[in-house]
Image (cartoon, rainbow, N blue to C red; front, side):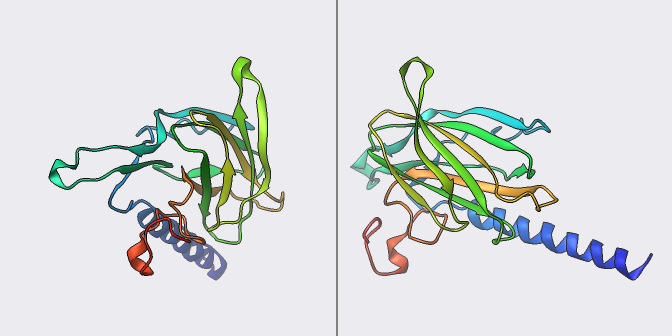
Length: 202
């Protein structure tokens, strides 16, 4: 085996290992948070140029009230991809998220390596099947985009890689949550104890 081949294998193992660590890190919701995603979400990924994954869940993101008699408070419901979506440069992937009694949401992508750029088109599904585009541009990896919308809405999210020079498929994780759950610059539910602030406080 040549040195070039060995080097390629080592690079591949490094990428796979780093992606596995990223999955492990991102897949740990804070206390008081529940992921509404279907367990099988993302398994329908295929080689089509446009992959429609449908509704992520029949549940809606928002606030779930719990019985406080045992000291339990409200729980935040959000969507987080249970597995990375492996997307090629010539692919677009779309899916839909239902919202509850929330008037704004945050969409946050995570990927590996971090320099990969993702293009998002986020629309509100209207009665009769029409679409109202809320945002169409890049959302930086590790950042988030806040969008305002009405209660009990249906969002359609379409995403693809930016730049045709990306040769291999890249993994993508997406989180959609009520605005204020994220701490700026992260993809995970905000735990105010880390900075001495209350959750959601800016």
